[in-house]
Length: 181
Image (cartoon, rainbow, N blue to C red):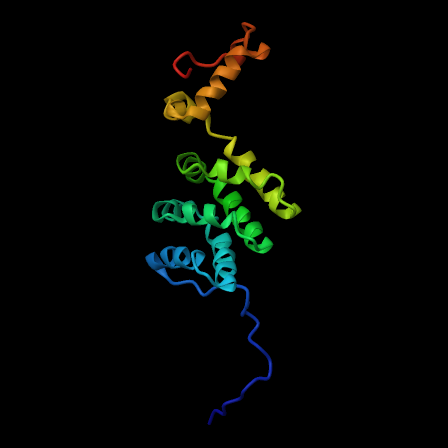
């Protein structure tokens, strides 16, 4: 007959800093609610969980669709250092995906990130720079299709390129397609 033994040790898989994640289609909406919580520990746990989930582009798409970017933009102004660090980490991970970069441009995340350029935390600034680096790497087919030509920042960039010395020469590899600008 089996006897019940109670161990004095904690199970090895429990991480107290990680939020319990709902399954299926309820996971990201629940985390979005937790991002807006008044409780600091709840926000931190939700950010830790989002860091793990945002490696999948499908999760990034759903997160943008349900409004996580707006919640994350609000958390960039949080007074807690760890919340700002983890928020920039989530945004950096989202920026590694094409759908995340598109979401950054559509939801004006770049402007919200720019306020953290002088943040006192080096980890926050590092994540910020990595996110901006990935956003700057839009795929060339998006430019060729003219998808971003309606964006004011892109139009200013095209004006800057037209007037720079680098693009005045006749080298074909440096010429912008005429339909872009």
